Each structure stands twice: as structure tokens, then as C-alpha cells.
Image (cartoon, rainbow, N blue to C red; front, side):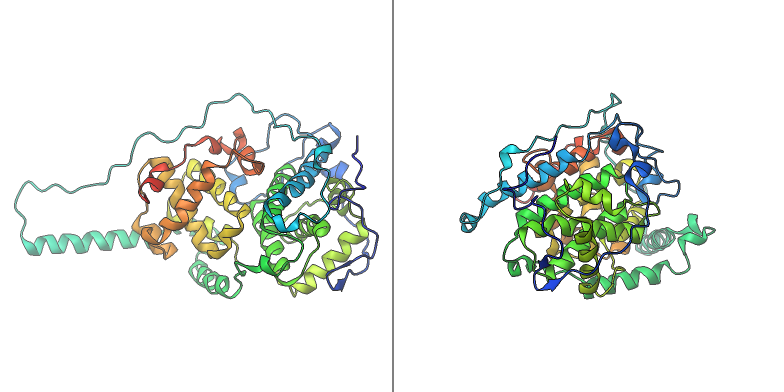
Length: 431
């Protein structure tokens, strides 16, 4: 069943105590969490992984449990990751002298069968802007007064998006504006350098994309929270920005970032042995624990950073979104997570651009209300450049080797959001 890892620099099992960069890993800690067979019996073909009752975010609106047929074990995912890392080297001619990976030995990922349900369709009815028709002559003073009254009404509506949560103590309505003002300041001070990969000597942008695309599938199979995925990607980028990593340790970095994000966000989380298993046992349990210590020390234990997820929730509320818009927005922003070039945009900007692009995709016209602009602080014109990049990602989501996001959102659980036609007209207006 397994595949030999002798000649594979990604999957070869390193020796315990191996150094990463210039820092040596720490010591092993005891395992005090439940085994994989308890939290996810689907791996041995018995039952599916149960949903947690108090899921937050999209899980509240997506239904109860994922009723899809049993999914394959994680070994094909692991082999896919290693094969793609190997193929990524051909994009960088300067690395031709480095040892090649035996990608041809790995099995090909088989798509999860899709349940026969109604196709996900974009809204066909185009929103018609309201107009005020006057059949009688109106004086200049009356027109001015009417405009002032309409502006006042709209501003009151925009500011009062939290009225439905006034009695919900968990919504923190009294402090929500201050919280997001703090998030806006923090995203500036905690931004990741958009060219940090130039400091890495053995990994590149393509390898990062392969890693994150693979982790999105792992995140989906473990049925983790949405905020866990965004925090995982943030931890990977912040760690790679400060610590040089060799190629064969890159997958270990992704696994440890997932473990830390789970400890921060989840109630029930995978144990260390689960992570060792899905890496095809390429790493020892001790190595996972040592890198966990190194990553926390490198990041100075700072886990509370504003990711695009926190802004997505607020901006979707301002957009008065329904389930279709919400799912499509998250589909587009997860496509952005895979792309290294999107690090040049702040998290709040990417969130606003994803929602703007999703609205344009659903309605077929540019859709960005004054309410959205008020709460996001971004105008439609500022979002257009980023939005056109997102449309390009949407067009290519089902092609190439990095199709993990497309497969995830091409299921009934996520409303077949990936089948929605891209907003081509945004690209045409750029020509």
C-alpha cells in the first residue's frame, strides 16, 4: 500500500533531532489527546467524522453534517502533495541541479463523488436600482431637502447592521466598532512581506501554493472551522518570513501550523499521530513537537492576528448576504489563499474584493453599495484591480494541478459554488 520514500526529498523520514535552518527543535511533550480512530472513524471506513455542535462561521448555515459518501484515506493526498512539489521544480530552471523527486510513482487523486442534487444556479434576476420618477415640477429647495432626507435614511440603515444582534451577548454589539477599528490597526502592523520568499534558498512560491492547496483538502477532510484554515496560512507565511526552511521540511511546517491553529480555534482537534499519518509517516512525532516549539518561539507566541476571515464576517453582514453570496465569497477568497501574489494586499482589502467579485458574479453587474463602502472603507474603483485578479483565479480554478479549492466547493455541502460562471465582464472592461 505504501510507496518507497528513499529517493523522495519531501517524503523521506528525517532522523530525530534534525536541525531546521539554524535552530534546533525542542523536546518531546506527552500526547494527551484522543486518537484518530475516535475522532474520525471514516479513515478506517466505518463512520464519517462527526460535526461539532458549536461550530461557528459558515457551518451554522451549511447544514448539519456532510452527508457525502465515504472519502478516501489521506495517503493519496500525501502522495499528491509530494508529486506536485516535484513537478513545481520545472518552473524554476535554476534548480535543475537539485535531486528530482520520483513523482511518477505516486497515485493520482480520485475525485470525491458528488451527490445528485439540484444544480447551483446564479441569480438570473438582475437587481434594478430604484429610481424616483417625478411627474410634476419640483422646486430646487424641495429637491435638496429630499436628497438630504434620503442620505440620512441610508446612513442610519448602514450604521444599524447590528440591530438584530442587540440582545446577543456573544455578538458584542457595544464593542464591535472598536474591535474592528483595532483589527484595522493590527493588520497594518502585522502585515507579511509580499516578497519574503526571496530570502528562502530551497523553497519557492510554487511550493507554497502546493502546500496550501494540500492543506485546504486536509482541513476539509478533518471538518475544521473556517477560521482555522485562515490562521494556518497566516502562521505558515509569518514563520517562513522569519525562518529559512529546507524543502523536505516544508510539509512539516504546514502540519505544525495546522496543529497550532487547531489548538487556538477548535474544540476537538486531530492528535499528533493523525498528522504523522497523513504525511505518510515522513516525520516522527518528536519532530512535530520540536517544530511546534520552534514555531511558537519564532512567532513570539503571537496567535491573535486579524486574518481575512474576521473581515469577511463583518463585510458580509454589511452586504446583507444570503447563503449563495456567502459561499461564493468564501470560495473566491480561498482561491486567493493559494496565490502568493495576493500577499501584497491587506487582509481586509482581499475580503472586500472577494465579496465585491462575488456580487458581480451573481448579479452580472457591478454591485457595491454605499453601506459596503462605509463599513469596508474601500470604494469600488479601488477594488477593481484585485477583483480582476480574483476573476482570473476563478477562471483557472478547475484547471492545472492545484484544484483543491474547486473540488471542495463543487460539492452539495458548499452549494456547488464552484460551478458559478466567472464575472468575465470585469476583465472585458479592463481591456
